[in-house]
Structures are given as structure tokens and as C-alpha cells.
Image 1 (tube, rainbow, N blue to C red):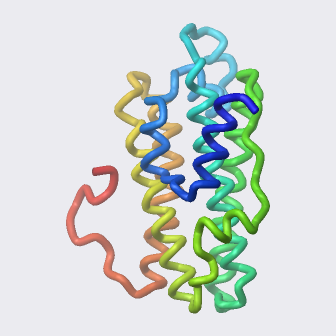
Image 2 (image 1 turned 180 degrees about the vertical axis):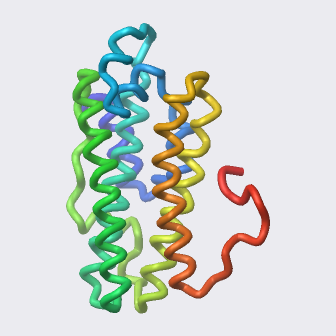
Image 3 (image 1 turned 90 degrees about the vertical axis):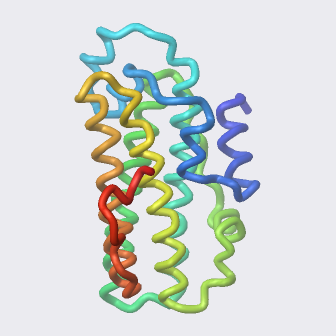
Length: 200
């Protein structure tokens, strides 16, 4: 197993995968990687730069998307979610699947090997699925993961001088922010009281 796959796999197995932490694993993505992630191969072709860290960073992000997909699967399969909430969870899971697919395609275009999804039992253990006893427990777990994702994606935006590249990270962060807001509303928790609540 190469070092990028080993690093991503060890994060999942150790239970220390954190969306905020994924940006600490190697810095911001290169402009080439973000262009490919955005589906703009023409822009990427005209750029130069060392993308050696990119596959590793993208694989950590991919491992975390695998985790989010499985977290929603565990919630959906728990029998704890009522019908309207279950529908929302399945919808949010589909967003994470789209993020996963974009990350996998980008990693492959860069000549890397995407980190494999683990068995659901691995995620159940790392997320402590056995402690989920109510719909509120499931929603609280999902909200925690989504808030971490929001802050991680917002954290990369300042690294990009090109507004198109920053836009990709912003769109990912927007998905995660929407998920978090809906989840805490479903929990009956108040929205953040202050302005500029995310990404700090």
C-alpha cells in the first residue's frame, strides 16, 4: 500500500479522521488538483506545479467522504429515523456520494489510486454506532460531521489566488453548511447567534 493510501486508511482505522484535520495533513491543494476536481481539465492542462501532495490530501478527503456516506447509511439502517428525516438523510448521503465520485475521478486523473471504502462495520466502530439510541443521537452525529466538513472546506479557500479555484471549495462548503443547518434545525437547536459563525 502506498503512503497516501496508508495514511488515509490509518486515519479511518484509528477513529481520528477529522474534517478540520484533513487540511493539516499536507496544506492546501494545488491549483492543478482543484481545477481537476472542478472538472476543468483544460485549465489544469495549462498549469504547472508539483502535485505530489495532492493525491494524499485528496485521499484523506475521500476517506472522510466514505465515512460520511457510511454514517448516513448507519443512520438510515438504524430504524431510528422517522420518514421525513430519513428522506433528508438519504438526500444528504447522495450529495456525499457526488463529492466522493468527484474526488475519485480527480485522484485517478492525477495518476493516483483512490483509497478504498472500508466495510461498514469499521465505520460503525469508529463512529460508535452502538451508542445511537434515538433519532436525536443520529442527527447529532451527522451534524457534528457536517460542521467539521464545513470548516475544513472553508479553511482551504484563502489558499487560492484564482477565484474559480476558490469557488470549488466554496461550493463544497456550501453543501456541508446546508446539511448542518437542516440537521440542527431538525434537532430543535438554535442557529448560530452571531455572524461569521463558520470557518473560524
